[in-house]
Image 1 (cartoon, rainbow, N blue to C red):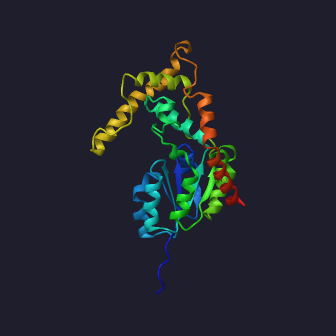
Image 2: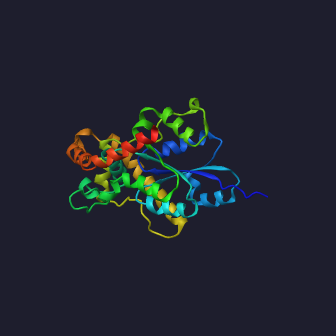
Length: 275
C-alpha cells in the first residue's frame, strides 16, 4: 500500500491592519477545492491537519510581534507550507495600529508608541522592518511566499482575491465577493474623546485573571463601557474637541522616510513574485 501523501498547506500569516479580517471573512470562506480553517479554529488547526481528512488546507491568522514564534512553530512540523503575506507601507500601517490602540483606551502619544530616536516605544523599530518577515518565511518554509500589497486589496479587491485563489489552486466566484468593509474606522473626535476619558478610567484590554471565563466577562464589560463612549463622542460639540491630528503629518513622513529602503525591497520582491 502506497504511503499517504502529506496534505498541501497554504498559510496566510496575516499582519494586523492589512485587511486580514476582511480576507478571512469575505474572501477565504468562498474558496472551493480547499478546506479553509478559520481564525477562530486556529488553535485546533494542527490537530485538524494531522487527521488529514482533506488533501489541501488554507489557514489564516493575524500576527504582528508574534510572527516569528508562530512561523517557527509551524515550520517545525510542516516545512513545506506555502506562505501568503500582505504588506502595507510602514507609515500607513503604524498610523492604523496607533488608532486601534487609542480606540482600545491606551493613552500613548505617537512618540511613545513608536520612538525612532531612542527605540523606547511600544512598537520597536525592528517591528516595522517588513522585509525581514519575507526572509523569515523563506528561511523556515521550503515554498516561496506569495507577497501581496494592501493597496491592491483596497483598490482592486476582486483582482486581489482572484490572485490568491489562483495561488492556492482554488475555485472562486468573484461575483459573490462582498466589497463592503468589515470594520469602520473611528474619526478624530471619537479617538480624542476616548483618549481623554482613558486618562481617568482604565478601559484597556488586558488580562486581570487567568480564568478564561472571567477574562471573557471582563472584556465584555469593557466593551459595554468603551463603545458607548466612542459612539457618544459623536454627540460632543465639535468646539469642545481639538481638531489637531493625533499623529502629525511630519511624524508620519518621518516614518515613511526611515523605512523607505525597506519598503522598496518589499515592492521589488512582490513584483518579482508577480512576474
